[in-house]
Length: 381
Image (cartoon, rainbow, N blue to C red; front, top):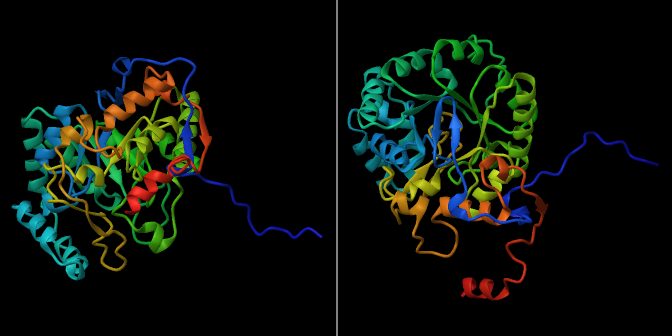
């Protein structure tokens, strides 16, 4: 007698469970075009620095822009709550583990100062850099016009989970189609992990979608509330939504994989899964120029009732340029991410990021352990 199932489950895959298949032709890595476009902006490096206070301050945003990518400044963070944010960041870095959660809750309880939004944006723009800024949905309607007036180039609206429709008794939720009319700049929205949620967000008129719930090193959403989808499957499903929307409207919406990338191979697999760019957090927190002083913390950490981020010690071990372009001083894939992408594109015969989307992938859970006995022994010793 067949037992009826209460619900069906599908298999989902993360970076460690898949591998890229080399192409029938190869390409010189120097000829690989890694350009990434969002709205009217094109970047030579398809890497976005996450909107986390430990990673992006105005100086880091300027440096990232000069290197070919862009960094997102968190307008709900310490940069807009404090006149001297560097003092606050130092306090967070020096706090004992047992006290850091309560300290963060206290620090982020201070009000946002609208004048500081303008000052931070204008400082980035004066340096000739692209200025991308991030807001949470609850503050977007109030602060997005302030950011737009100050000259911001790209707006990111970001929370742990974002949908085009939101049910609430207390307020009329943020309507993304209205936001697109309110501000005249490209809008990136996240985070989501499913085809249907991504497609509905795209139909609202946005320009990019962030993919990933809980995979970041400084995020504990998966542990605390059990929500998330492994990044390969999540990226593929959102990329499928992009293709559907493109056929419907002729508009190409960028898919940005956000979180879960630890080494170069993860980044390469994200692009083969359909990403147009990746957002990096803890990796870039390791840059000597990052304001977190060797630490990173999830932006859900200061939640007043249910903190879901954690402060992690990542160390400050290399310059941002070395992390992105090398030369690498290690053999574990944690430096020269752009070099890794170009090499993978070359081996797979991909001249562009869109060519990389077509690279064949296989399910390969032993890809990192097969034949690596002596490496494992050495690591154990």
